[in-house]
Length: 68
Image 1 (cartoon, rainbow, N blue to C red):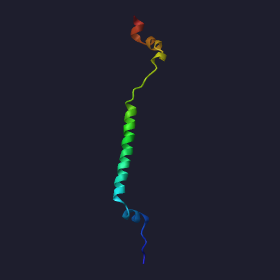
Image 2 (spheres, rainbow, N blue to C red):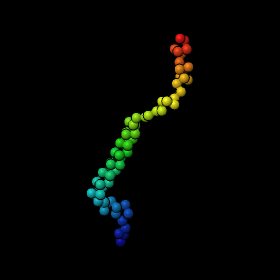
Image 3 (tube, rainbow, N blue to C red):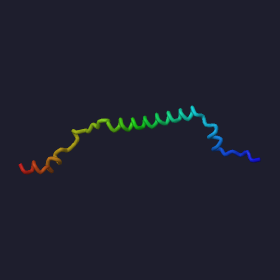
Image 4 (spheres, helix red, strand yellow):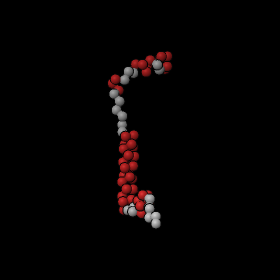
């Protein structure tokens, strides 16, 4: 008599439906929080220190200023 049942068969048979639903909700919350964090980071304004930018190099390379 072979009463052997695989571990996978035991897990599938003993699976709780409420636990499955809870896991789905938790995974959905994790994914949504990651998407929201990326979206929030993408829409965050970038403050550049414009006082330290050297604008004289950009003006010297401009062709319209060199002609006048």
